[in-house]
Image 1 (cartoon, rainbow, N blue to C red):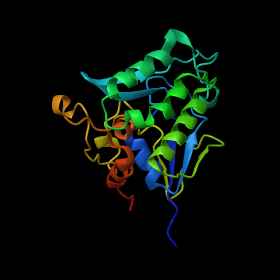
Image 2 (image 1 turned 180 degrees about the vertical axis):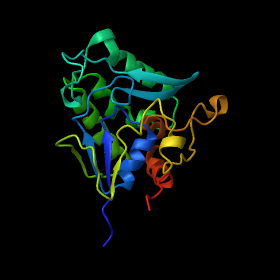
Image 3 (image 1 turned 30 degrees about the horizontal axis):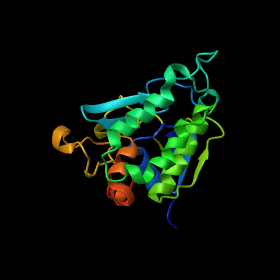
Image 4 (image 1 turned 90 degrees about the vertical axis):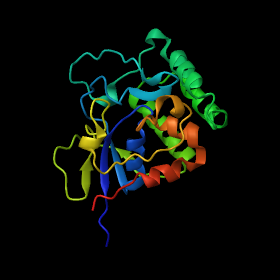
Length: 217
């Protein structure tokens, strides 16, 4: 009988393509909710492609009472009108892509409704994106913070990270080039937010994710 492959991932805001290859490739995914929240990770930021290059969008969070606040307790801040700014940035970056018009009404409500907790916002967005791409991962949140892993369990919680080079830390992920609207100007930009793939490739996003999937033995 084939061994079940389990991935551990951090919560992520419109996670990069690398993250979604795990949702496709692994039999079960645990999303970590007991880790200490750290800024400048994909937990509250995503990277999209604008006309002048990569652009990071960060969700402001309420400063927790303690330095070691678990992810599940992190609240979203209303500071700086971020919902309006993020949606405007996404719209101006992707309104000329082949599929933005097709999907925009799925995404817009997330920038109109106020969510209290970051992990709930990330999870609902992720589940919707999975439906649009037609992938059906078995996902659940962790019940505790694990330090040791059994055979067949793989820890990507701090591997998929905006400050780390996936070529060095995640050798099973090999980006597959796909059409990008600014490619003639910027070249192909690998491992952007999943919305870059979705708005550019639409239903073919699944094929791109599958082509990027390597097996862990």
